[in-house]
Length: 291
Image 1 (cartoon, rainbow, N blue to C red):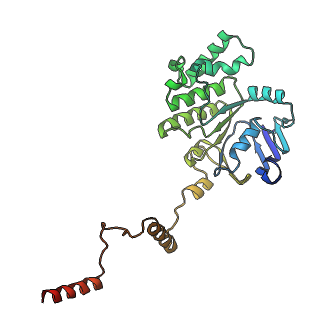
Image 2: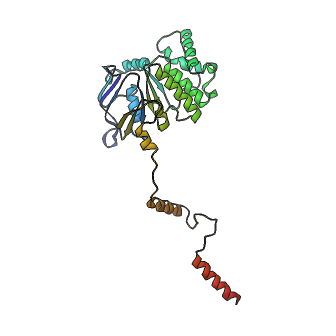
Image 3: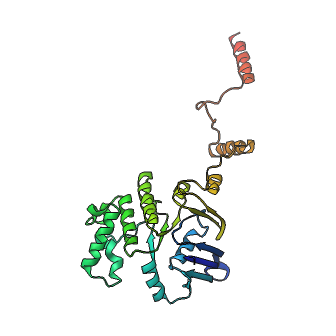
């Protein structure tokens, strides 16, 4: 039995003439233990899809089965319990509470389960050790770098031992070095048996996935298995293809530059270059003047 099964799921926002179709009859099956990367342009429905899977939103139409159970129509409090116990979220902007230290931020989800303060802080400290942040557990979020804050966010996502981790642009605010650290942590979580759903614009991050889906205008237009450590064929074709510059491209670029900087030459200083014919005419005039 598949872990996640979406059948003809659609999501509409607004009403009347202002209705926006965010998802258009999406079908998706995710098996337990997969590392799924979701790619597509902004507005293609990636985050909406993850919000539905994470039970942060409800589909307008369609069926969502989680471990064979239809969870799309459950009551809000029941969905909240499933979300708390089964799903961990890692967001682009960390979402750490600014007035709580790192340890309390990570331990917070356990408070909603009724765990005693001593037990939840002990578990939070152990999770922070796992992500290399134990020496920062009494720091405030403002005292952390971007990479450290994201590692704390990953620790918080892991605190309830969820089976699904949804990471929505987790490296969007990080430099390349911190991005590698965060992705290696997610890869380690995946090796421990968790299912990872990653939303990203960075094609290089799909190397950590064993499956890539491509979205456009609310639909899944591609679904490709791939080997971990390699770029999927669709990623190479879409994001690394060398486009040949045509004559029309060159003319369009020159026209745009002339419109932007009228009266300026394209190169060679502020004075316009004279053509050979113009130079000859100027030279003849100079000789007549001297004569």
